[in-house]
Length: 125
Image (cartoon, rainbow, N blue to C red; front, side):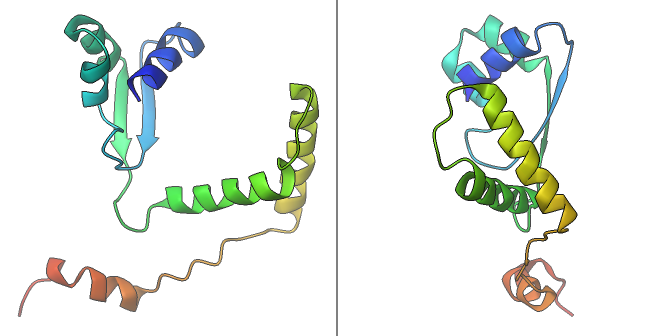
């Protein structure tokens, strides 16, 4: 992740002072990855430009986003493209269709399931 953060900060968002990231709790999604990849000075310089917010470990909305991206890949991006404009056009048509149909994710995780899994977090009475 260190190389990804570096490229993001030094190339794509080079003119910004700070970037806010909302990311899941994967063990490589943290500032430590910068210190493993770069010298302490460079890692600190990059880290100071990041504001990281981790999503909850359970029931993360990123799971829903990952599901939607998987659908996008299967339904829209399963073939090769010769230019970015064709990708943008195809994704735009796909996205408009999904929005017009008000497609949703059928989230199966219920409150009772949460209570069982997270039982240890509830107070003992």
